[in-house]
Image (cartoon, rainbow, N blue to C red):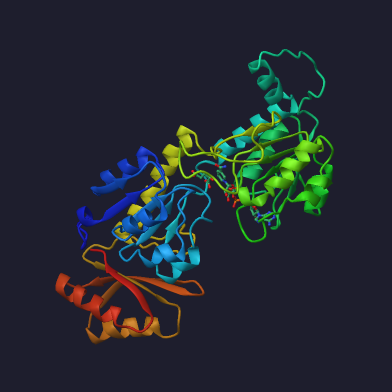
Length: 410
Ligand SMILES: NC(=O)c1ccc[n+]([C@@H]2O[C@H](COP(=O)([O-])OP(=O)(O)OC[C@H]3O[C@@H](n4cnc5c(N)ncnc54)[C@H](O)[C@@H]3O)[C@@H](O)[C@H]2O)c1
Ligand SMILES: O=C(O)CC[C@@H](O)C(=O)O
């Protein structure tokens, strides 16, 4: 479809080595200006690049702060090629009328598989045995080595990842407890606990699958670690801010916890080759991985397609379905129509002023869809008008008080 702003002029900035499938999705949709970086950019470079970009795609390392958004004068949309969106100031993006998209499901199975594999490895003491063999040692013994069958797994955050782990763990013969702030339907025989503390006290293995929020920051500190069973195992593939990492190192050093597998850290290197620093380095009973819980080729390939397709859809047709910070609107295309987008502060009277413009011009609206959030309204309008009239309408729509952005799509 011919868009009013030529696709070849739309600049797409892709950072952090997002999958080639994202690049292919943009190219197949007619987007040719794609700037691709394997790493996250340092802030000054990010600001420079984002000031030219219409669309940006990131993973978990690029911090899109309110300050960065101030420089993003041309930006129309953000794609997080991952689940977490804590690296983006979603409110700042909303205030500027910029929708943010993510991939809420595509890597969840990969995380679930890794976590269960780590649970089994740690229960057998394999990380220690592996390290000893590499040092030329030999310690053939069953001491401290257990099956996971019959053990209790505590899942904190019973969402897309937590529930999959729960089902797979039951298939291995484990008992599953879970704790969530929302009421959740138990899958299989999993049981909710009355509190986080109860889960910590009753579980042999605890695995964390909460998002980064003010409530989950430092959710696991020294008292929570002390509440866990002696010899218990802690797994974290959620966000590095959820655990007090120094307290975890102390607990492991004291021998209270039996082991840990940590994929996410309070401070992570910006890219491959940069130094990794952690108080957990050198502990044989700790599996350390470089934030790769969701990094399988299958997951990254699917994420690339999913998020790029959402960005293309928004850019081509205005659909904001599944945006995480924006009113969700999707309107089928109408033959013989031109499509206008109007993003505005959600204050009374904007829609009536919009519609007054159309009736004053004696213009027929073929379709209209409005959706609001507390701070923001988004209306998509299909109008029977020629190109010049539509552009003129756009100028008038832009002058309505409270307008944040307007676009003529086609
Ligand atoms: N290591 C990786 O590579 C990797 C990959 C994917 C996701 N993640 C992280 O894992 C997190 C979880 O992913 P998901 O797909 O399961 O998300 P989800 O949104 O489906 O599930 C999160 C669950 O946590 C619950 N929750 C929120 N705050 C809570 C609190 N204070 N106490 C208890 N429960 C709380 C929610 O109600 C929800 O059920 C993501 O937000 C992301 O940060 C990491
Ligand atoms: O790919 C990444 O950088 C982040 C992966 C994961 O933490 C997510 O939130 O999906």
